Structure formats: structure tokens, C-alpha cells
Image (cartoon, rainbow over all chains, first blue to last red; front, side, top):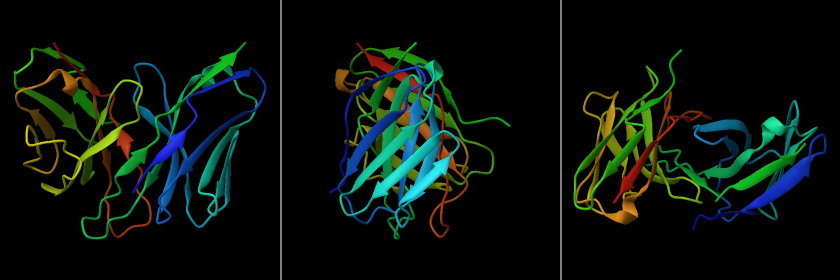
Length: 115
Length: 117
């Protein structure tokens, strides 16, 4: 079955690095994603990684994927107060019959940045 | 350009009533998804459209929920005989296509917050 787990809260000081962790259960995942949700706003895709990669870097964001342990992490360097939000880990499984890339989300990690 | 829009942004209704939630996807996006996000949870998949047809409705919780996309653009999620447990934010997402391509980002709308009293 599909299940995505995340810790619920993380608090960091401004300027420090944040690391948000996620575990997933389905080994046939094709893509793994990190989304950001701010109060009253829609989900914003931050970055994604294909399941045959182990690392992806995009400016302040670094995604690490450990396929053996089914562990995904998002590191935010130089965390700013504007990074305060809920971060969702998600995976997509390709169902070749329907062609659906439906996303399975974790419960989200609330990141609080202390000035 | 315009993103995914959803109307209404808020809907309050009474238990047992019928509601319709609308999604306007990004122009040209053939794939459309509905998700439901309950308080403190991540979004959960409800239904996926490719063009006009519902290609995957495995996430619909029961037969009170139904969705249509008659012209392959705007979609309406319909909930009959609403229950208090239906209270959630209903999110719509669209992407350019799906299936035989390597990656398609889903763009999410702001959601409709449904409250059933």
C-alpha cells in the first residue's frame, strides 16, 4: 500500500538550516515531491526528484533520496522567516492503465522559523 | 497567465444539502485532479480526469460524491446529502497531460473550504 510519513513540527532559528524528513512505503514510486503550503494559499511545488536519483539541488533547497531505506529529506539552507509554512512530502505512482499521476501526501511538517 | 481557480472559496451548508464545487483549470491542461484536505492532514486523492472522462475515481469515498468535466475544461465536484464529515478543503489541480510522458507538474488551485453544519 501507499503511505507517506513525516514528523509534524520543526522549529529552527533564522539563518540555520532546516531538514525535513519523510519516509514512504511504495518502492515503485516514480517521483517524489516537496510542496509548500502557506496559510490561505494553495500548494506550491518546491522541488521533485525522480526515483532513480539520489540527490537534487536547487538554490537553497537540497533533496536527498535513500531508496534502500525509502527515506526522503528536504534541506533548506539559510532558513528565513518567509520559509515558515507547512511542507508536504508526496509521491506519485504511475498507473499505466489510467495514466494517472495521482499524488499521495504525508500529513505535513509545520516549519516555524524563529527570528 | 491565470492559474487554477476554484469557486466558491468558502461554502457553508447544512447537513443533508447538495453542493457543487467548481474548478477552472489552466487553459490547455488536459489532466485534472480533485483532492480533499481535512484539518491537520495532507491532501487525499479523489478523482482524475483525462479530457472529459473520469479515468480514475478510486478515491471517491462513496456514491454521494460525483464529478463531471463535460467539455474537458471546467470540472464540477458534486456532493449529495452532505454530512459533517465532508467538511474539508477541496483542492483541484491540473497538468498539461498525463500518461506517456516523463513528468507533469500538477498546479493546484487555492481550494474551496466546505463547512457542513
